[in-house]
Length: 112
Ligand SMILES: [Zn+2]
Ligand SMILES: [Zn+2]
Image (cartoon, rainbow, N blue to C red; front, top):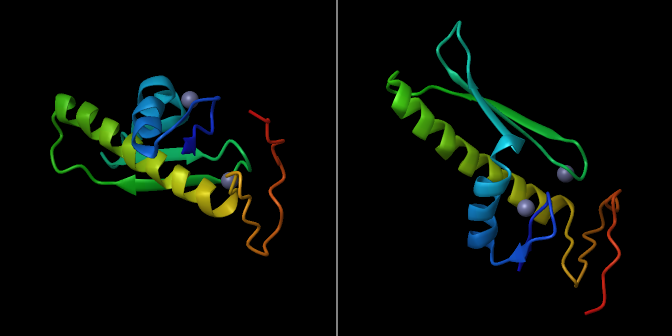
C-alpha cells in the first residue's frame, strides 16, 4: 500500500497516483516560462521540503496540448515524489531504516 503524502489516503500505488492528480494537482506546479517557451515543473516533498524542479520542452505550442502536457508533467512529478518518499521516508509498517538519517517527521503508526 502506498500512502498519499498530502493526506490520509492509503491505497495501491496506482490509485494513490490518480488520487494525487485529482486532489492535489496544485502541489505539482507546472507553468510555462514566457521567455523560453519551455515548461517548468516543480514539486516539493511535504515531509522534508526538498524540491524537484526541472524544465521540459514541449514539442508543440498549442494551448490545449500544453494543458495536456502539464497534466503529464504532474503525473511524472508525483511519481518522482512517491519514489523519493519510498526511498527517503520509508513509512511502511516494516519501517526499514536503511542506515540513513531517520526521517524528521516520523509518523506514529496507528494500531488498527
Ligand atoms: Zn491525498
Ligand atoms: Zn522528502
